[in-house]
Image (cartoon, rainbow, N blue to C red):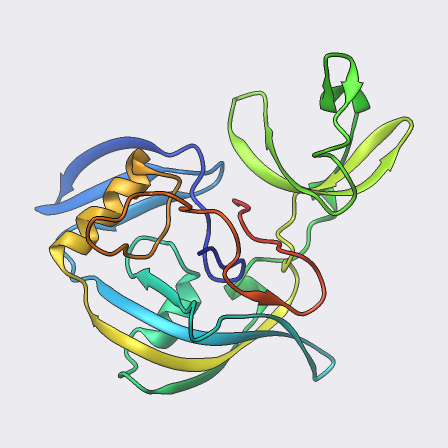
Length: 241
């Protein structure tokens, strides 16, 4: 399952190197234009399962953006940059059954909204065999783009006109103050098997889950779909930043 607010889907994963700094093993993965995971392999990782509700807060008023369910909670292993750092820090010390309610400012979440992240591209960019790709390019669609250095990133189509297609590369929650409420279902030390399973995903086993599959499961469905409910819009997950 992929959760838009706390999970960053891994794209164009490339293992750069495994090295040691001051006798600490460092596992480095390049997985998006601006981000690098630096994982201390000698540090104990936590396996955390939570149910949460995410609200945006504007002028003191809360609006539900997304939520998990008991059937599909959010599961992740700490220390890999899969969840927001501030989210991880707020739940990592909580015991099983603990409730949480905390607020993240934009700087702690997805940053400020940047107008320069909006671009108008030629319609020809989205043509196949001379025909505009109406099936995949429509207002509200979240698409994968590639820059001139072949780095992949996600963007939302905001407008389609005769002279071009406008896309917004800002995260959908950029500039938003976020309020997370919920409960910790499980918080324990991750096993070596779970950590190695996750590393396999991050290094090309599949597109990156962030959660543990049961023994014998493969990568089918990994990274696809939401697994949660959105209050207004359709699924905004599966984007990388």
